[in-house]
Amino acid sequence: MAMTTIDGVPIHFFDSGDAGKPPLALIHGFPLSSAMWEAQVAALKGKARLIAYDVRGHGRSGAGDGQYSIELFVDDLFALLDHLKIAKAALCGLSMGGYIALRAVERAPERVGGLVLCDTRSEADSNESKLKRAEAAKAVKRDGSAAFAEKFAPSVFSAASLAAGKPQVALVKRLIAAAPPIGVAGALLAMAGRTDTTAALARIAAPTLVIVGELDALTPPSSAKALADAIPGAELAVIPGAGHLSNLDQPELFNELLAGFLACL
Ligand code: MLT
Image 1 (cartoon, protein in one colour):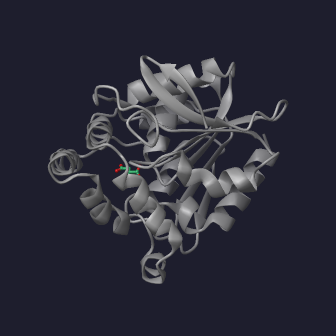
Image 2 (cartoon, rainbow, N blue to C red):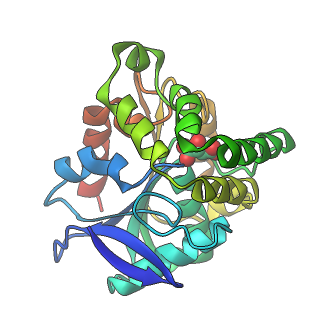
Image 3 (spheres, helix red, strand yellow):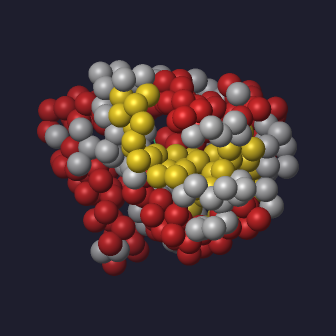
């Protein structure tokens, strides 16, 4: 991992550096870190210039003042690409990472050479979701990240993965437990305040693949289908047996899809 400072906040990132390969920035879900992409980075070696980074408030990156918006996360993404002298990259974002990718392509389509939108949606939060996030932000500051991890992890894997005690479940709990409560709360408020990017979907010209776990309870296949239907030429892939964190739940199937997408860039 390397580090750069963006807007006064240390941002940790991995850059495979493959010159001449299409750059692909991997944007993790809430409240994880770039470590969730380990299986993808290993499997896609040599197929792309892979960049995986810790969004501020997550992983090894600094939390700053804990006051975030998706807009600020997009600022950080573009600043990181600037730092790496990358004018245009494909973006692969899962869930919160998808919210960041969707706002990034709406804001600066010329910087986005391809999109992989995993287990995510374009709609803003409903009032009910905003209130749940406000409650969760209070809870994580009161009870800490480890307690938050115990509640959150069961919602993002398939029942079979949980029952089998897959190592990925323990990894996710570990990553969340290590996240600073101020970062987790800040990301929750950023997601609650995000804009609705649905109206911009019809203007997306970059090749797009929408991936969703068949058993994703947070952003179900019906949401993914709506997303894919609204983006010209987008393809939809449903991963059998996977929950919300589809890349961790079924890494081999996910990697095949990503490799196929990269081959077409
Ligand atoms: C994520 O996986 O990034 C979050 O669950 C997304 C969300 O809560 O909307």
